[in-house]
Amino acid sequence: MEKNPYKHEDIVKAMVEKLKKADYVDAVWEAGAASFGRVDEWSDIDLYVVCDDAHIDNVITIIEQSLADFGEVDLKFRVPEPTWHGNSQVFWRLKEASPFLFVDAAIMKRSSKEKFLQYSIHGKPFVHFDKTGVIKDDPVDVDKYLQEMKTRFESHKTTFELFQVLVLKELNRGNAAEALSYYLSYILRPLVEILRMKHSPWHYRFFTTYVYYEMPAEIVERIRRLYFVADHKALKKCREEAEIWFWDEAKTMDWDDVKERLVSAK
Image (cartoon, rainbow, N blue to C red; front, side):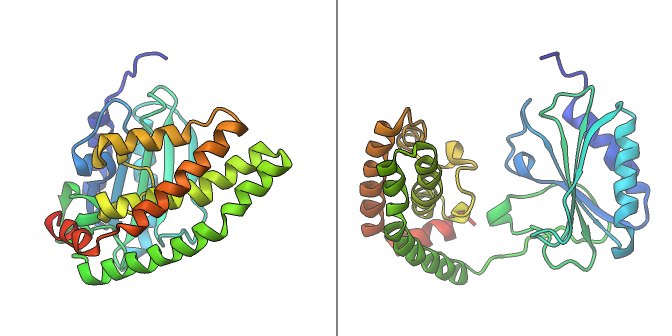
């Protein structure tokens, strides 16, 4: 791969300078790796923009004009609306830039209630400008969050037991690919989620994102081994290990400790 001729900060600066001049744009910040101080050569650009409700398309145009200074956009994807989060979201990739350095922009209406500003969950935003004071922590109610976690935990216990047979029946039929798919969805995913409830509860819904930064190394290594399954025989053994591990963790779940972790990490 050729050396990236453009830097993360240069592309961001170009977009921010043009967006700041628009009177209908209230604020711009970066999230993702930037929120946790982990931007590196493989990071994309997670841009968040708040604007007047009627100017979503204008913001998209400004971003595209900014990116044009760096060459051709060879890929663009606007997420069909309504999106799951209720905001507009567009991805761009520059032809001459590293493919890792694509732009992921969430353009939020001023009236939008969900701006992903719960610092405990999404990290502290890297603020470029804020004309109206919109960028501020939206505190999460710890007790409510904990109750939601407990409810999900109980659901996982039921579905984990129920859906073991989905893997087993496909192994019995010799359908290894189908068995692997069920294994990833109905065994590893809930296992990782309850492990995160114990060790990084604010991100229990983040699945494997950030596990290398937030989970004990020995646990991450064990998870990794369960993911890299060689064949149907190895899958059978991994399923058995994952099942035992899940119930060991479920039986020793200490909600007082989880709450303490939530409070101390706020």
